[in-house]
Image (tube, rainbow, N blue to C red; front, side):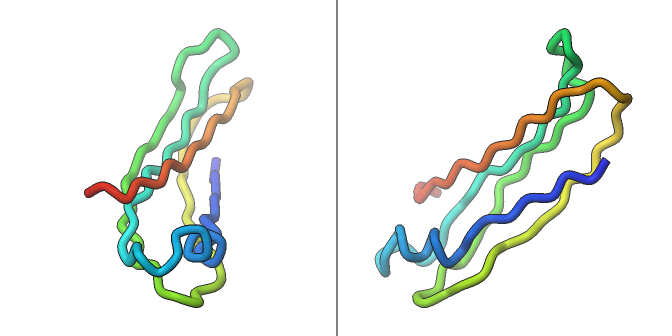
Length: 82
């Protein structure tokens, strides 16, 4: 299964202002069975450069393999700490 996501860079740049140039964002996906067992998961930390006036989105894809009957969870957690 392909699980795609997008991070709205224009919105992030506007929210952060001009003080933050580099941003780390943890992104993850988890596919769980109805009983809570983790069938597949992925976790990455992205380093993004935030430019003033930037627009558009950062788009990425997780490819995970699991059987039918699952629940999908996704998260993105920005942090200005390195």
